[in-house]
Image (cartoon, rainbow, N blue to C red; front, side, top):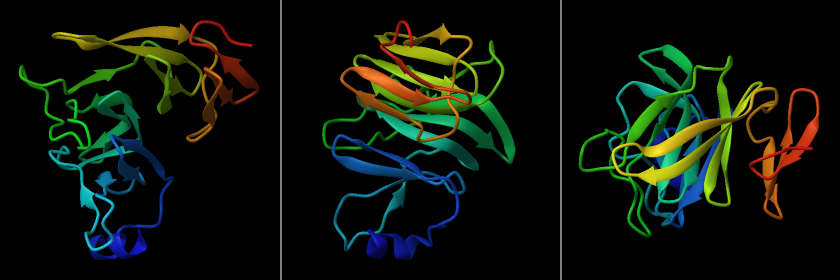
Length: 189
C-alpha cells in the first residue's frame, strides 16, 4: 500500500478511518478527501469519484452498497452534525456519485436534534448505527425518494472517539465517554 500511496503525497497526519466496500479498500484521514485503492500495487490510490470539491470528512464507513461520510467540513466550515452518503455501488466497484439526484441514491442529512458531533458509525445487522458524542442514531435503508430513514436510538449514550466500536455476536460494544456498553440496536447494558 505504501508504494501505491506515494504518488498521491498522502498525509500520514490525521485520525485514520477506513472500510472495505465490495472488496475495495477505502481510507480517510480527515485532512484530505477520502481515497480508494484497486489493490494493484502498480496503481496509486485515488480520491473517491465525484467527491464534493473542497470537502473533508471526519470518518467514513461502508453500509450495504453505499459509503457513509460523517463530520463534514466544506470550504473550511465544519458541520459536525452533517453526514453524506454515496450512490449505491455495483458489486466489486466503488460508488461513482456523491451528488444527490433523481436517478441515484446519494444524499445527506444533518442530525441536529441532539448536541454534538457525529463521531463514527458501523453497520449492525440490517441497520447502520451513527454515534455522536452523547447520543446514538439508527439509519435504515427504505429506498425510494428518501433512501434512508433516521431515528434517535439513545439520547444519553454516544461514543468516546473514532474507532471505539466493534461488533461481536450481533451486538455493538462501544466505549462511551464514561462507560463500556453493549447494545443490540434496541436496548443497551
